[in-house]
Image (cartoon, rainbow, N blue to C red; front, side):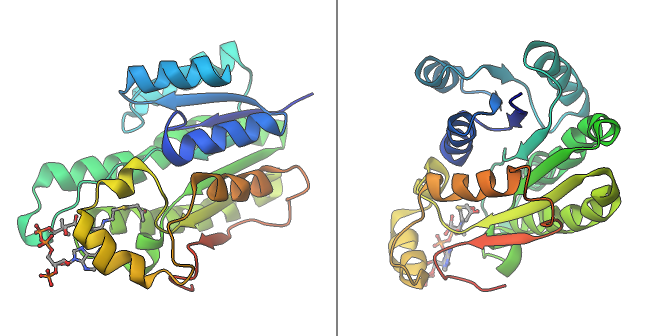
Amino acid sequence: MSRVALVTGGTRGIGAAISKALKEKGYKVAASYAGNDEAAQKFKDETGIPVFKWDVSSFEACGEGIKQVEAEVGPIEVLVNNAGITKDAMLHRMKPEQWNAVINTNLGSLFNMCRQVIEGMRARKFGRIINISSINGQKGQMGQTNYSAAKAGELGFTKALAQESAKAGITVNAICPGYINTEMVQAVPKDVLEKSILPLIPIGRLGEPEEIARCVVFLAADDAGLLTGATISANGGQYFH
Ligand code: CAA
């Protein structure tokens, strides 16, 4: 029987590529999204993947959403925590709302989601949790004290939960994408992208969402049980960690 996978932020950008790649591999996929109804509807029409709307920064909303996914699609066996936002600003200009939104959405969501699927995975003795962190959690990034802190936090969370879950047949891994060709990166000021970021990427180009999706497919596989607590860097050689 095909396994059930839930991808948060799974209707756009890297998340959409992950949802599609898992579906192609035979998973029953559900994709959550936070706010862009139009993009979610288009994604659903194009892929046939069911979409569910909730805010991953809310524990209660995650509980309700997961309940709905499990009722309609099945118990979640593969969880991809991909949803994330940026609110870039130098710290000397950063507002508390920019800090809180990024920490709660990017890092808080890992607790909100994992806490509510982990008991089921432990009972079934199988699970794959894949957290989409970032190169900027590994190396730090000016303008992103909030985002870098959240993404680095995801790596600690991953390693701790991997240890807790190993005996229950659950693997927990992180992927650190570099700069990927998505709306999030296109939102970086053009001159900063061209002058300060692109020249630092040895392969000489942005990554593509599908190149992250293939890492997820690899980690999600039933025969990937030896790999846990790992961080996979997929950044075109920009940073080795
Ligand atoms: N790398 C190197 N230098 C950077 C930089 C970066 N990513 N971002 C900004 N700078 C430099 C600018 O080139 C500029 O240098 P000069 O003074 O020599 O011209 C200096 O920092 C100040 O920048 P701004 O004039 O733009 O200052 P600002 O206060 O208006 O804005 C900022 C600062 C918010 C950091 C803005 O520059 C910005 O948004 N930068 C991009 C930050 C970034 O890389 N975000 C990643 C988003 S994508 C993502 O997060 C996905 C992922 O996981 C990789």
